[in-house]
Length: 175
Image (cartoon, rainbow, N blue to C red):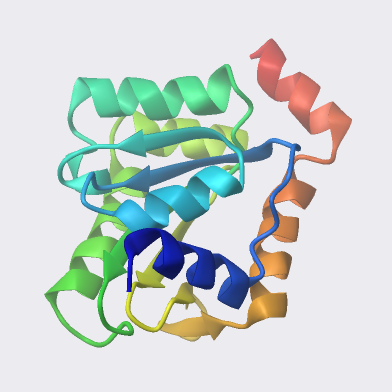
């Protein structure tokens, strides 16, 4: 199947809305995540960071500065760390690496306090490039959950709702 056809099918399968509104989030991906990058771009986030090592490179000054800029200057209210594999999420090194990267952002000496001060959560999203499914980490259940078509819409709505409070946005931009 040609790549463009596969991507179109992935988008249809996930009911990913093409929107002109800006999603108040920064997505962190690795450069090899072709399908994920295209899908994320269709959501129009305030920022997308593609870096070797993904969020596990949080100790890199450029990565920190990009995430900080997205939060402080662009109004990102969620950090979404992504993984893309040709399988559903199962126990293994890829999942451990994704979750370690999320924890690393929260525990980072510079980013952790910034995320906490601005109330910015870190989410984990898994793209299954073969089945064209999206899975989100559920912290309370300690497992990935398959996002149905409606689940994707709700995921994006929750991110958008975090930015709907004008007072919060003004307080963030004033700091």
